Image 1 (cartoon, rainbow over the protein chains, first blue to last red):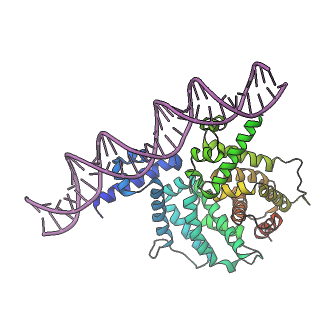
Image 2: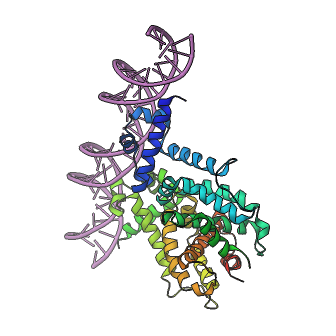
Image 3: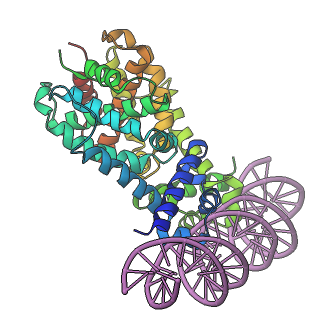
Length: 177
Length: 177
DNA sequence: TTTAATACAAAACACATTGTTCGATTATAT
DNA sequence: ATATAATCGAACAATGTGTTTTGTATTAAA
């Protein structure tokens, strides 16, 4: 990939990300991004078809990184659900500014869609940890939904608390005693 | 209120609601609504400032009806949380087509905002039912979030199950044993 | 270093959407 | 029947989108 291309792509991501911190996604125009990134109009469209695709590719980047990690610095202790969740939260924290920006926006939907899709796969593996007598699919959306909400809340508070703390809280309210 | 006004307003709501079933909110144009409702452009703007305000007023209507009910047909038995939740679900079911339309759309955010705002007030009154040792605000967003998710799931399944069943499932996974 | 490829900038473009305005027409309430 | 008020329909400026073109500058490879 051409050095110029990478530079431009980075500039667009950066501008977009910064704009997301103070503006709602739907009110950010391509012109805003262009101005902030300091690039030509045609250049933007050479990289991304639309603003939506930009958001999508940004999400792709993030989730690829989070759920595809072979070699990563975070050391999980144990193999249970809780450290797994802490691990995910730790990764999200790496993309703090992006994630907070997206989740604070009116259109978290795309992001949440990705998130919940991945979380569903994860939680399905731990379903046996929960003995509650409700239909499995209900249990699953309950777990995924409440954990997503936890993440949103965490992000709204600028991810102040440690990932481990959040994971601990979550397990406390969720586990069947 | 003039009969014509009511008729127009209804036509707009109806058209909007129908469009929401097959289109994303953000991709519905005022022109689409006008065409479907079969009204003049200026008429639309005589009723609603913007498309956003239309959505807002639609949500206002729904939530006013749900959370302000003095005299309503649904008979709660008991005063606990579970019948209260069933009651809310029963009301949502009244607006089935609207609610499903909005929740299926890419922009449930406004609706969910309203919903969660109201649910927060409700759940705060029942916080003592839950003994878990986590911060209160975390417990609150957890309860509100997981119940919202439950509603979304219910709506995605066309509200097949009875409100009481949903409330029962929810209480089962949520209550501390 | 030279060269060919290509990413970029800048400007102009057609097009769609928005929200407003205005005069003519129609329905409503009394 | 009449005054009132809602609607229609057309035109309007303003803004945003996505494309195209032409010239320039940067890059990777020879």
